[in-house]
Image (cartoon, rainbow, N blue to C red; front, side, top):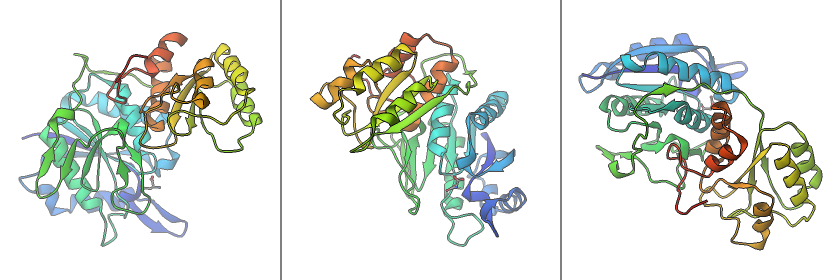
Length: 338
Ligand code: ASP
């Protein structure tokens, strides 16, 4: 019988109402799940429970918390067949992306889940999300970092939060679902990540300065100037469509300067379903000329986490640029050479 670790980090699933709104409530949550009969049936894997301190609304999570979660998993890697991380939905896709890079050679399921409605409420979606995630983690079928939510199993570094209201909170716009849970759990085996490294290794992240900039019609040059003048190691620019920016000739020299200063500019799209190709339109060509890197079909969440990771493994500037457009953990599709 397989054994999994259930790690509670915070998020709506374990919150109760206070006069300031919903807040994590560790005592309530622990009591609730230890009394949940469905977690003790023979269909369920054996499980141990742990919680991080303090429990957080995931909007408060940062690189420090990603490192703490990664270390908990790495320290107990040999003791369990799989891991379920209970986490808030707001930054779940960022944490999942970060863990996918930090846990190199991962050969066990790591499933992040949570809920839109707290477990303490009658209509909570937390119960199914929790039970199905535990079954998936115990089955050992999928061996990568995933998000299970609202009956979908998604690759963690392909997922993005889509809804703050609906029970299907996450989508994976540029990669197929890994499984769908209906009456039975239907796995889509052929799209699972195949590990590329024999040894499991945990690499904590260094909190280097990273930026994200979303372009919009009428965006001022000063905004680029302010961001590029900072000491950012990497800036993800969310462009229009397939990688287009507003027409401003002065932008190219600014970007060239940023590059000379050691800032890596990564181009992602504001369209969730997209592959950046800066050569398609004249409006994107300037980015190519300025030496920006295509994030291809990566989510912004994955691009941010990947920048942290590549700077943490201490690669040189050109190698990081090269690797940002290359598939490392299944986070992007390499359909043609960069
Ligand atoms: N603010 C909450 C969080 O991310 C939202 C949620 O869990 O759904 O922790």
